[in-house]
Image (cartoon, rainbow, N blue to C red; front, side):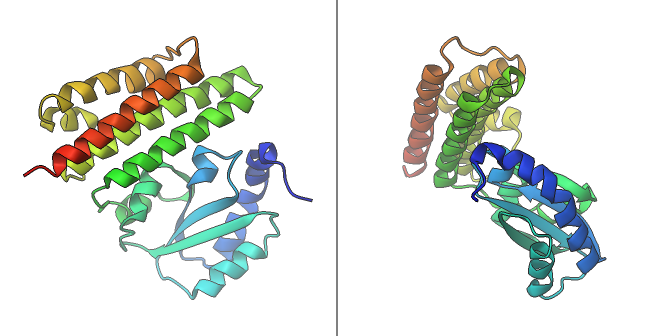
Length: 238
C-alpha cells in the first residue's frame, strides 16, 4: 500500500538509521553520510531519499545499492558516493544548501563540497519552487510550531534564490550576503538589501510573519523572480 505523503517524514526517520547501518557494514571506510534534497527541505512531499556517502576508498556502485535495498525501506533511495577529497561539482550546491549530516565527519563533507561551482540564474529560479514546496507543507501542517517553521523556511528560500542570482551575476562562489550586497551595482544592491531585510532578517530570524502569509509569499516570490530576471538581463549587457 502506498505511503501517504504526510507520513513520509516519520518513514524516513524510522528507516534512515537502518540504511546507514547497512551502508557502514558494506563499506567500513565510510567517513560521512549526508541526507540532502527534497527529503530535507520538503519531506512530506519527497518521493525518495537522497544520500551522499563519503568514503576513503570507493567500492563498486553495486555494493552501495545492495546495501541500501537490503534495508527493506518502502521508498526509493538514491546514493551518491564520493571519495575523500573528490569534488562533487554541481551537486555541491544542493548538499551545502539542503544537506543534513546523519553520520560521520562534517569536515569530510566540507572537503568534497568546497569547490562549489558558480550558480546559474536558472538554478536560482528553481529555488523559488523550493519555497513553494515549503509553503505547501505549511498549509497542511496541524502543529502550529512546525507550521510556522515551514512558513519561515518558505520565505527564506526566496532569499536564497535572490542570493544565488547575485552570485550568478557577480560570477562568484562567495555565498555571504553581506559581501554580495556590497559588490552589486546600484540599484541591485539596494534591492537585494531590502530582500535580505524583509525575507531573511524580519521573517526568518525575527519570526515576523505577515497576517496573510500565502498572499504575501506570492507577492514576495514575484518580487524575487523579477530581481532574478533583471539581474540576468543586466548581465548580458556589453
